[in-house]
Amino acid sequence: MSSGQASATSGVDRFFHISERGSTVGREVRGGLVTFLTMAYIIVLNPIILLGGIDIDGERLAGGDGAQIAAATALVAGVLTILMGVVANFPMALATGLGLNAFVTYSVASQMTWADAMGLVVIEGLIILALVLTGFRKAVFDAVPPQLKVAIAVGIGLFLTIIGLVDAGFVRSTGLAAPPVQIGVANQLQGWPVGVFCLGLALLIALYARRVPGAILISILVTTVVAIIVEKVADIGPTFTATGVNPNGWNLNVPVLPDKVVDVPDLGLLGEFSLLGSWENAGFVTVCLLIFTLLISDFFDTMGTMTAIGKEAGLLDADGVPPNTQRILLVDSIAAAAGGAAGVSSNTSYIESASGVAEGARTGLASVVTGLLFLVAMFVAPVVTVIPNEAAVPALVLVGFLMMQQVKGIDWDDLEIALPAFLTIVLMPFTYSISVGIGAGFVSYVFLKLVRGKVGEVHPLLWVIAGLFVVYFAIHPLTDWVT
Image (cartoon, rainbow, N blue to C red; front, side, top):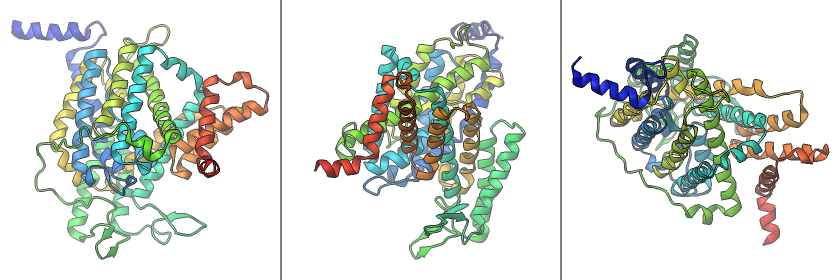
């Protein structure tokens, strides 16, 4: 090694405290690569989730251009993950949050335009930033019972699961009052696309059970290849055509190879947000509740993620606090706003970063490596137009399983927490609304404390939050009464 190379390596070592934390440059690079492989699926999944809904004007995000969404998703993830590495020196990557993007798609955008919805994400990010800078974030965190936070995560997991099953055509509406849903068509699994989904899910489960790094990404790529072959041979086509509906067709993307794989990314989605339009379209109370719901999900996921990763890496202090906590939270809050400003939904910290830590990552250099790989991936965004829903949504089912595992953290013998947790969990998938589940949980929690004479155990902020949700649930009769 030349003296110049030694000096450069030594400089990197000193900046990231690599040797001090018992790591090496090689381990950090490998850890960063593994983290990328285990979470790069978001480049594929985020466009599919965000394109799964329409706004109040009946429009799809980016005009239905999945490659544009994928490019912006990779760009924001890359820049913010690098920022996490350089500013906070922590081995944690960031990207568009699963669950958060579903909430934006199905609960927010349906009440306003996409630009307005992304504007709410920006506002939410700025609020989190203010909470970090003022130190108020901990006060809000302490207001919500820990087990309700667990229930929110579990409920979002089940919500993602049903979205995946429905988007794959595995579960479908019957059009009847009872039963409202069924398996496949006429209560039978029919068509090659559903078969591709089942193959993808089986492969993903097998890879995950074998602890193969990048299991989600590998399953998506392999299943997509199978889908391309199936489409080439069987010429299935899309579900919705100009001549009618093909119930056995591909749900969203038809797996046909694009004209080119590598292309200059289209970043036209950047800056497509509006801070004020949502207030006029959805109303003040609804907007406040939507922002709060985004805030709660973003807020608590990050606190848990950074603690879990810090513990895995052996970086927590005696009080269980990771190093540079304020900087970590600062970058994460900026990421939330940046995701909205880029039109790809809130960005947040990823628990998949723990895979890189298991590979040896201990410093922010691993995050820099992961971020650079996201930027490279931005140039192959056209590939997302090849990947059908049926190949990608098995990942939603697995994510649902991973989030469901947290249910053991709820004390089911304590009625005052078990019932609110139950309502939170079941109402999210059953109503296709994350905010309904959260609201039901908060309102029932406060109500049970009230009827049991334990008012003093309820944090004052929870009274305000529960009151806002009561107004939200009764918004239509209240509006009729007022007018």
